[in-house]
Image (cartoon, rainbow, N blue to C red):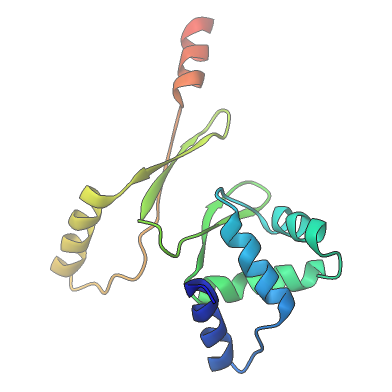
Length: 148
């Protein structure tokens, strides 16, 4: 069993829930995805493999994965929440183009140390760092400059 499966199985057991084949498939599918996903995209991926896994099971499992610390809500668009698996990945920020919606991830190593120091100085118990930066990607900047 892989580490995320061990973690999720232990988490579910602690909550008095079962690590069902459907939950295992959902977890495996999440960790095969290497991009942000919403609940519906995840359901569609799983449905291709196993049509017996219900949409409701997928939707109910996502909060469990978040609570277990394996997945985080990464972005909120106008109509949906997007998620990403975070186990084994360094913390990062999202640079989001306000024009085309492109998302670029960038590391937080240098900034994370500063944030931790600021939290300590304020006697603040830090739990999660999420950083979302909005602006214009290079393509949209070129398009705006070309139209002027």
